[in-house]
Image (cartoon, rainbow, N blue to C red; front, side, top):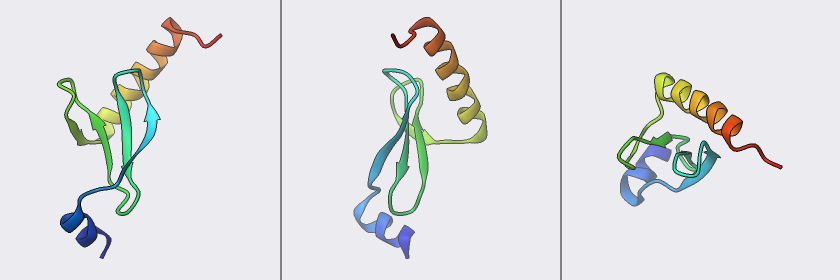
Length: 68
């Protein structure tokens, strides 16, 4: 039923996590589909490999840009 709603009306994406200022992880509030940005800025499914890449990028970015 949830995916049927998303098929008709589209996903209601919420930002789940800001990886960097350019990369984000999204989650549909209806069907819980997880998406992320690819290297061209398009949204793509969040696979385990991309989740690991985002985590590494997040750690690297935070080391270079510490929150004061």
